[in-house]
Image 1 (tube, one colour):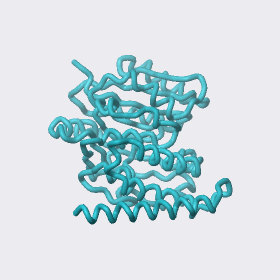
Image 2: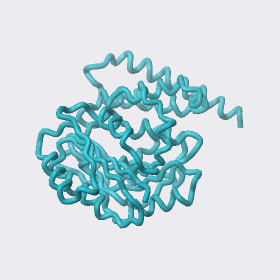
Image 3: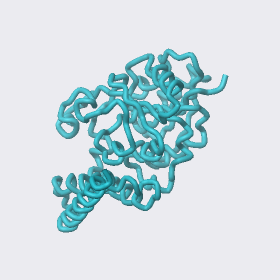
Image 4: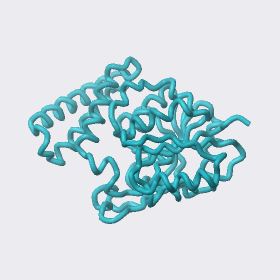
Length: 300
């Protein structure tokens, strides 16, 4: 039987959570073959030991990729690409878990029946750890309470970041890796968002408005521990998209997103950045956004 789904588990120092993450994969009720790749990025706590215990108990279920030292999410993800054998790719961060045993089956069934979609996502419950709930998601219980999700997701929705798709909800066709410009994965931030911006080319995604996984919101999350670098990475990626011929048709959405990113940085008042430069760029991209919005109106 050929492999239908490759599950990529990205983990680093997740000793408190990794067992639950892996067990949530093993509990999936499916009628197809799954490949599970556990990519450990040089964990220094007990994560490796827990992975090895589960590997010993289920030697036919897992393959483990790992580095002796920490190289970051980007390298960890790229190391997995050549090992993927499934028709579809599911993502699971080592500190999250799937809460519905039929999650994969439902997603696979949808993509099998809807060839014009390149991916399917779903809502996720947010589990707040310690005081971090005041820093992100404002104590909301579900992703769908933080963003407005349409049932059908188009490329403009992703570029403009009007909705943030939970990474551990993703099921995408592995064929989209051929569409990806790997040179634009320059750092460790928002890797899935960047991959999906290419993966949705000439296609669309579907959103299941049910929470089938759990996202742990804690202080070690990359968007909280490296706030400025996180948003500068988005800015750099969006500016690179402007050089791609395909994305010339989405300049309004790109400029919309760029202005939002600069506004976020301005409001955070980071000491490490030139505030005059931030304001100048914010105004520039606001003007660009309005210009392309005007062009869109005249086309209609």
